[in-house]
Length: 251
Image 1 (cartoon, one colour):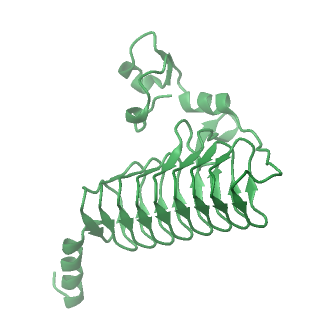
Image 2: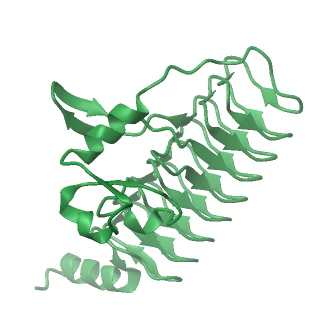
């Protein structure tokens, strides 16, 4: 399916694309299926399915009490799944991955379309990919993607209560402090650090090596190497000057 914000991520090898009439002109004739309710059709085609869970622990994987791994999930050797954590189908965890207690990997993302009888949940079937040596803290949630997986790069570390929305891509060696939240389809490049309780709006790109201050609200792209703070997030030096003027009572 092709839509305004996700077009750049769609594989050009698709034989037929489900599109709305609004953007049908962006796809050559013969490769498009035009429908006035394209998202609703996609939701009905995918449909939801209830996961089944395995009763055994994969070889070389440590599961703490109450941890569950769904049938179809892949967990790499040397990984550890914390107490009460859940790994859903289509999740692929590399070697040495750590999942904290109570975390949910690959659950359904937050997405609805209007159906004939009210809101219809959009199934998320693309799963999650956690590369080698990723660590996920306690009570984190990483939502499955719809058509492309949510992905976290090698050696990235997430603190407790971090949320990654569907279709998010996080690069290698990133560090996220507690309660960071990323909305759907955010792209975070390598070596990015994000302070606690910072929030990132959907479809934003954070450049390589950028720094996001705690409690920042990022609603636009951040260039590589930039440090931003405040809401809406701006370069940190500018934010500090603004705060200084505010506290001095100057206009």
